[in-house]
Amino acid sequence: MVDEQDLRKAMLIGNKTERIIFATTPELKEAVAFMSEERCMTISAYITSLIVDDVLAHKGVLPDGFGK
Image (cartoon, rainbow, N blue to C red; front, side, top):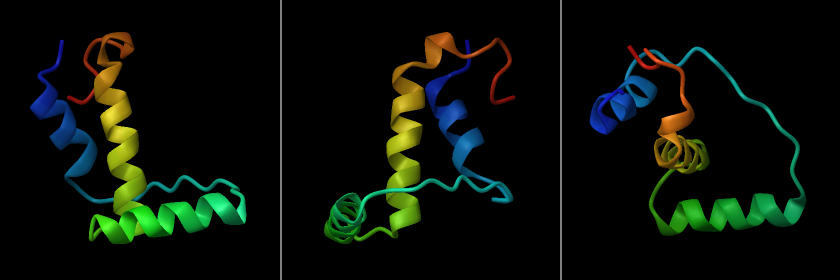
């Protein structure tokens, strides 16, 4: 299994060429904007950090060799 630090680096460091686009309610958009401002992060960085934290919390289900 991949070390958590190495997995985090693999997901966060490097050229960001992929996009994820999704629809949301105005209320969720407002909440995300507020939370990201509170953490001095861009909305993109805030959403990315939430996703990475969730992936790491469930890294046991990732296929062998993921992140290498």
